Image (cartoon, rainbow, N blue to C red; front, side, top):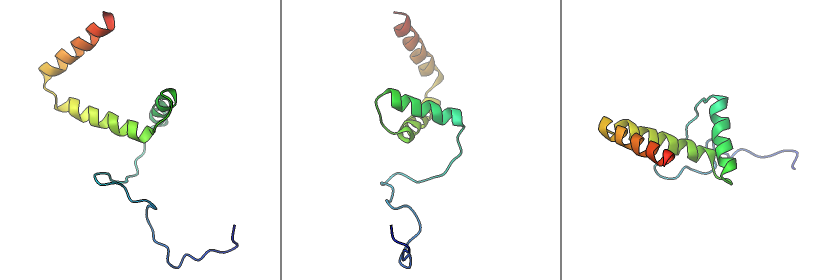
Length: 84
């Protein structure tokens, strides 16, 4: 490790720019939420908890747009699969 570094040409911001369609944000989440997602990733053999959170949010948005009749039918199908 050097005693001094020259930051004269340094730039602020992310070292690696986000891919198209992605935006870097900072949010505050409950510790319990983060712990749950991290545990899910660990139990599934690895991955990225941030991607899992994004996938859960996308699914939530899709379900909010789902008509009530479709929601009821989906829930009934899921329950029948669990019991059968």
